[in-house]
Image 1 (tube, helix red, strand yellow):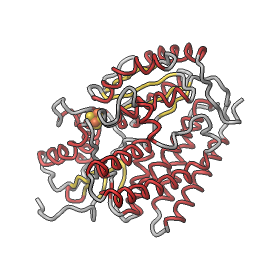
Image 2 (cartoon, protein in one colour; image 1 turned 90 degrees about the vertical axis):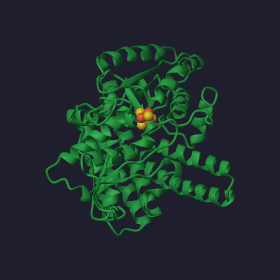
Image 3 (cartoon, helix red, strand yellow; image 1 turned 180 degrees about the vertical axis):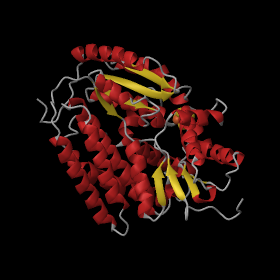
Length: 423
Ligand code: SF4
């Protein structure tokens, strides 16, 4: 075992694919800085087998999947612990995720691979520990651009004439985006222009796919625990199943979590009462920069996202949640899920699905307050779906939920808006 402090230099960094596009974009950012990086290979049954072998049952499903994927890398014939790093951000709040970086280190010690580096920035400091400010900003842009492409896919795919066309455009688009992100030595301004231009190109290609854009599909908001919600393997591609049952899915994105952690960081600065003005000013400048990047990246999709716009300010979501879960008492994704459900109601959604790993506190708390949320919002249907890799009859249950959504759609008071090109 080496006693030198561990760094990323000379190692291959594996990114867990919480969300497919974002993991690829994040890996591309690291590559632009000269670090060999790629997402872990697509999860499969072996992922669960290995994840289960090294967990006791107290850990949640996202940990099992992430650990299992990392252990699959460790099974590879060329695996060298001293040349490998795993990206494992942590989060605060009522979440076991904060302990998983440590668990990973323990497991790798157990299998004799203690030279592996677990690279672990934290939500507590707004993920400041990610490296240089430029790097952090580049990752933010990658995440937001991947969010925008996924949102465009979900906007268009339910209306495609030939199955698979939109997925193909999405794949090309992610590859084009990563190509722009990974180029080294480009100035920040030029890089943003190149990302926006690649996205504008993708938007044109999505719109060129033969599709029947007709109004009337039930719009289903998807909220819930971030890993399980974004990770298609963990949620068995629930958004696609909603589409197969005739709906359109509006999936809460990753950006939302980053805005929330920024907001929490500002609260913490005030609570700590040290150098408040200077630290708050720094946090606010960072946010302004992030917001400017987000605007530039979403601009090409302005027309397409009519009616499914994300909130301009995360405080709006937190305010919507406040009557049910005050943020000072309920930390983490539960406030976002409840607040976003109210926001989605106001945007004319026809139903809400909350995706949660089995036994996660976020889903359990939300499930307890959803009846009240629904009652206060015209009895809009809201349902929790729990995942632990053993889900049965998911199609059937989604089919039943879509029926509820259709019946709500027929009597709802708030109509949704559509892009002008919808008939
Ligand atoms: S939010 Fe729940 S499921 Fe997600 S990592 Fe934390 S404890 Fe696990």
